[in-house]
Image 1 (cartoon, each protein chain N blue to C red):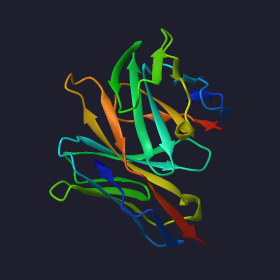
Image 2: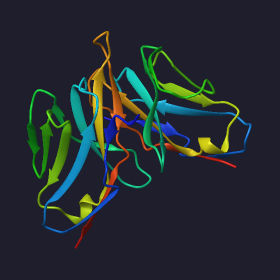
Image 3: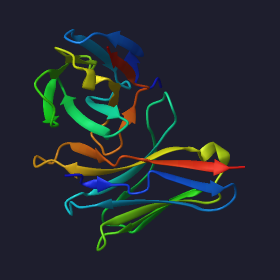
Image 4: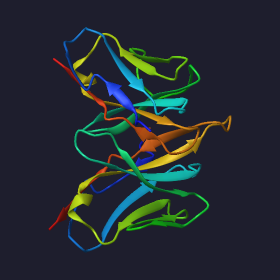
Amino acid sequence: KAGVTQTPRYLIKTRGQQVTLSCSPISGHRSVSWYQQTPGQGLQFLFEYFSETQRNKGNFPGRFSGRQFSNSRSEMNVSTLELGDSALYLCASSLQGHEQFFGPGTRLTVL
Amino acid sequence: DQQVKQNSPSLSVQEGRISILNCDYTNSMFDYFLWYKKYPAEGPTFLISISSIKDKNEDGRFTVFLNKSAKHLSLHIVPSQPGDSAVYFCAASLLNSGGSNYKLTFGKGTLLTVNP
């Protein structure tokens, strides 16, 4: 069974731009969560989607948004990029349980 | 407020010896605890977990101990191998009020280096 895939793997943007990241969960998994990893803060929860509905949201500004499609694929969008948004963005999928399976991440660099 | 804390940013052990990684938490409502391992340029991979109703779970070389009264858990790796060198994250799961989904709260990680 294929794992969680994320595209693109690397991205360079400039301040003020917006970016869209994509995540395809493991087949059959309907829950998709997004995390931001930075050296100083570890993994921080952004939001979680299940059946196209956002069920949980972390403490991030409204510039961070997401959505989930009927095939469970998910996208997250960051608008008006800031230097501090440079991070590894991780997507994880799960089958309604505690264990989440992570993708390789998208490394975003904001210049 | 950091609800899951890994107070040791790094740990170095010799191959064949025991590695003990520690994690403390503050929220007594956490119902499940997990350990993830992360190599550079890869996503975290699930290692082992423990329910809050248990105090020990073992899987091969990996054992997780939970002390609920102290709000402390630890991961023991015996024997340690050079391939175990990675960042280890402790995570805690909280069932939402609807009883239908889980949110993971992570510690900041501990870099384990196993020297040959």
